[in-house]
Length: 141
Image 1 (spheres, rainbow, N blue to C red):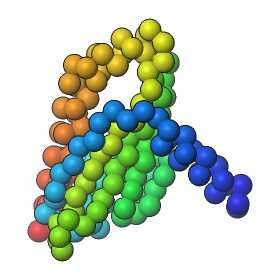
Image 2: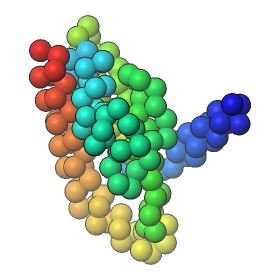
Image 3: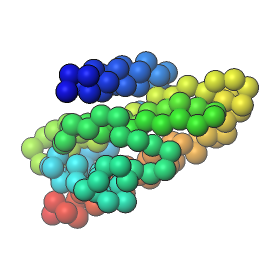
């Protein structure tokens, strides 16, 4: 069991060492539990099974209802998307999505320009946060 925990710590350490890209937050009018449920519904095809996160990601760290860290890689990038939930005020949750990534080589720099430099990544993350907020607020109402 200890070896498994050590592996989780190493993966988390690796994820935290990736260069910071950006962070987006949204205050949601729902408690942390409802926001967590909405996050899983928006992030997994089967919220009861975290292995059903979108293609290109795997769960790296799960601490319900506080933190969901996803990581992934492909030939142009190694990346992490970390969702953090904190209580803003009673009944309201701040949901933060932080992106970290490295883009090695010439192909990586081109890919970064296309995904990050174009603003496409920012639009996708903000839309995801809006969708999670809408779902959490419907559920928590």
